[in-house]
Length: 146
Image (cartoon, rainbow, N blue to C red):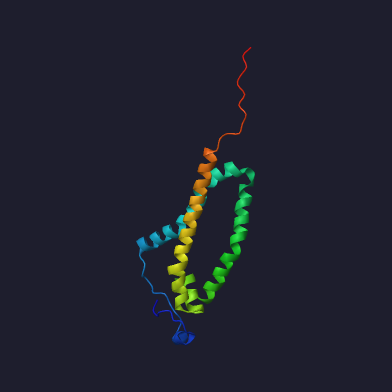
């Protein structure tokens, strides 16, 4: 950016914030694309197991997920149009509240989210282990020979 983001609107009266041209090369853009797309790649690799498990309702699951995430995508697009910035949520908080709110998001919010995801993963792992170790409740009838 040619200007640093500021907390007060009077500082941006001199001119709009602009991104610099030709800062990222092909490798940088490809790396950013891979990093941004990596969480969603699981969706493509899980399609077959999910279709087998869920059956014919699998496309409906994706449609419901689309409808749930659509308002968030639209709101991001609307805010991005009004406040274009590379930092997105961090910069929006910086400008809307104060710089410490954006810093809080990175320093406090991110570790909390990471710990929550780790705890969720552990809960799923423990739940699966407990299901496997549970004794069978099926009645086993020995074959009768005659």
